[in-house]
Length: 258
Image 1 (cartoon, helix red, strand yellow):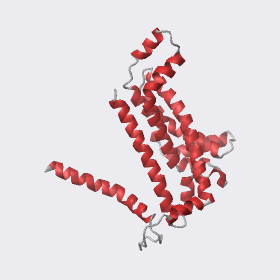
Image 2 (cartoon, helix red, strand yellow):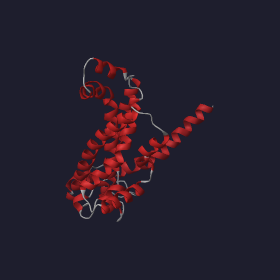
Image 3 (tube, one colour):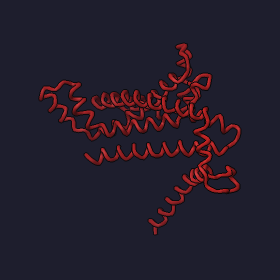
Image 4 (cartoon, one colour):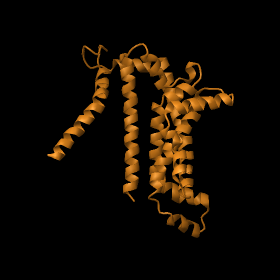
């Protein structure tokens, strides 16, 4: 009886979480585009997205920001995780490392904008990339550290005893072993960068040349929810869900393989 009630509760929670998303996805396929009248299934609104220069430009900006920031954040986050795991850590150090994950995005955005202003740093796509690197390093570090918790450091000692240098050991021993965790962290960082709005909004500067897709959605939704917004939100959610799913699978699979 108790398990049955828990199953019912679980299903109700899933309905509560995903029913609005399902409605949005269905409306994105509505030929008429009206939320109160269903006129048939059509991909017309998705075609309209591809035909919009502003949306295509924003999507390209998002891909540039997400790709470059993910590469940098993955490299720095992985090295940070390796450095932290090789020394004794404290609660204070962990709190300092994971602060960007905990503090509200609006606070981090204001801090980054103030820092750029203090340095008289020109805002644009490059400032968004740097901001996303700061935001994503902690997430990559956390994922890679989870992998390193199950790492057998004796193989590094064996590699050193056999005459391999530090770089050779890292390239041929350490990196291949932790690579599933590194890739999982990269996928998570890419997903967060694609979805992130507040930090990008504060650090983008003026002009459409640095407008990302979430910023474009925000500018469009101020005039009401249109079918194009439903279609665009559906695509963003599908990409985000897919990347997070594979990130979790990689991370769990790498730990289970130990």
